[in-house]
Image 1 (cartoon, rainbow, N blue to C red):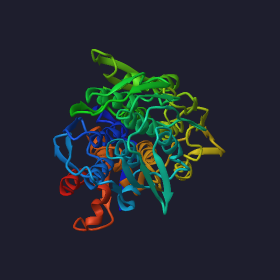
Image 2: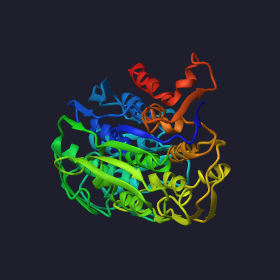
Image 3: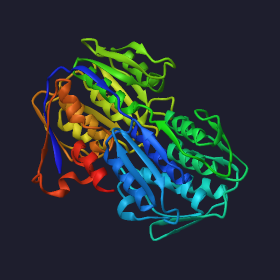
Image 4: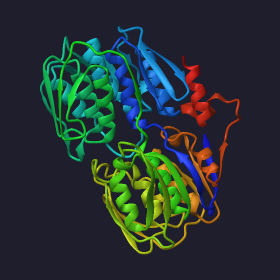
Length: 453
């Protein structure tokens, strides 16, 4: 398995462009199952999860062609309805194919999905939503079977114990575009990735209003057509690089920074002494170029993760690394995934003063971290450990960085261009194909995507 070796203490500076959002691209790719016409996405990052979704769609009869940061998809075999465990087990977002398949092909057989291991993330809301639309759901031997002659519009409530479900909203909204009659999704996720998906579906001929709010109304149509759509910039990647600038006392210019999608993050960064200055906003002001700098001494903060527009859970781990350098005690409470703290013991190995009680961690900041060998456990925890390594004294080794390849495009290359001393090291010979499993090095990810065709 690959690992990162980081020599800490180097100030980052330079310019970086935010890549297309993984969490937007995956449900966008699944829309290719809703039509027989060609669907093209641009601004697509070269990531392991993108490669996995492309392979999954190939198993479901969708032919995909890759170009520079784009993928064109078209259904060739509408009779393929089964997504096997071997492909689904590594990526939770594979559940996004369920709704489109039932809506268009009348039947779907899907293994229960996998993904990062940081607590229980059930798909019951997805299944209950599809049942409300008239699908028959069966669970057997770890597989979901969903079937319906034609889905019928209904009122679907998607609120869960920790808020609305983002992938569930994407799934039900996509399925409802081809349902008979009107569907109303109550307690819908308000994340910008849902707005991006709605925009694409509308361009395909869907009738959707209210995306971005807690109630979405979809009037079903008989068929959808093809389209070309640009994937929104990745707000989590943008936030991660902003924190990288702050934790190294650097100065980074970030292009395609989705400012309006990160207002809660910008607020917390400003509170602790990180400056995010707009340079050149786009016409709609949703994305812009920003300069990120920080004060000499950072202040502590209290952060609670919440559904959008609250503070995103996907930046909780990265912020924890940053708050280790704040002068005083900070508090982070995780309201979305209460068990999402696998980075805590690893940061403690680097000297972080952390006290966890249930879904809350108290960070006693003010001491410098020291390099250590640490283990990445999931995608965002991995990013947290890399950020800590950038600022720590001495050498840090982050093991199992294949997690990072699922959500960050060539992270080590980007950081190196900004002045970081970071290298990817493989424990296996380069000729060993398992080195590139799940994308391996990001360049290898792009090649593996091509090789799978």
